[in-house]
Length: 129
Image 1 (cartoon, rainbow, N blue to C red):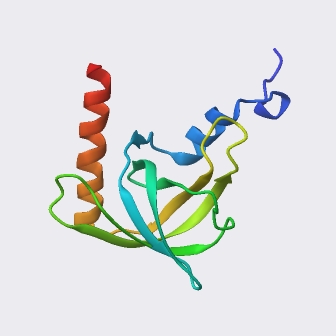
Image 2: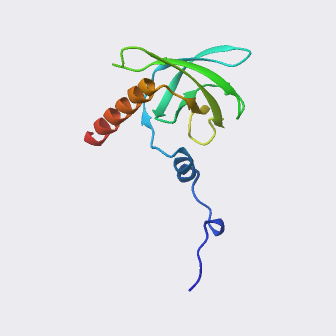
């Protein structure tokens, strides 16, 4: 019997991203303010999950950049303030909007619960449509 190895096969990038992500993201567009050591930005998210989010921007920060994040989730009754690290960038050429994927460094228990609740609600709504 032959052994199969993933190294012998080319997997679609979407599959690889989903595997790295660990949790499926829910589409969500909210304004997000974020800053690097040098600059402050205000953009919009494209999607979010318990581990991170994607920020649409024409000027993504380089992979590895530490950023401070602040955003409000619909119905959450307050803002979320945390830090994260850029883990991937896109330039818009592959059909995915230009931007950057950010992984949260740490969230407070209440912030994680707010995100988790919203993501579950959005996924439930998505399955109904």
